[in-house]
Length: 192
Image 1 (cartoon, rainbow, N blue to C red):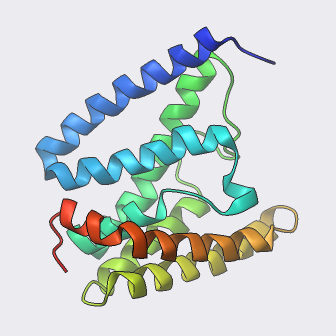
Image 2 (cartoon, rainbow, N blue to C red; image 1 turned 45 degrees about the vertical axis):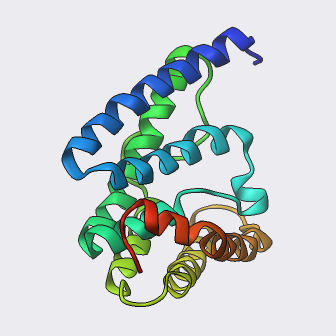
């Protein structure tokens, strides 16, 4: 079913308004660093999910903010940021999309954390535990761990996973950490 540009603009407008409202709450709760991390997750779940490039090319924008949340706020916060916030964003976007246009294919009931969310939460936990190491080492460790656990989960529940996407995802996230990791650390006041 195709929808007009008007529908897409309406969905995007509501998503942006919700992003702003939640970001204001995060700003008063934990400050600007959490707003930046949340916005990165939101972009991943709204724009990149619609482009449907996650599974094919391993491109995503949720690993770095989950990892940085573990480094910035500690392992437990990193786990819950990845486990709960990731699920809530996906669920909210699914509901917005459902009511206005078409539902996203997320493969799990909205807002309920999935086993994939648990694995993503583990990235934040691992990052928090390794916070004294260089960012590239932390990203490599956390992303490799996720890319080992995720295909195991997918193999148990679905068809054969696309293995090349997992390798590409590790390369992509390490490159992202090398290229913009320093800037993100400065912006979020981590100061390695």
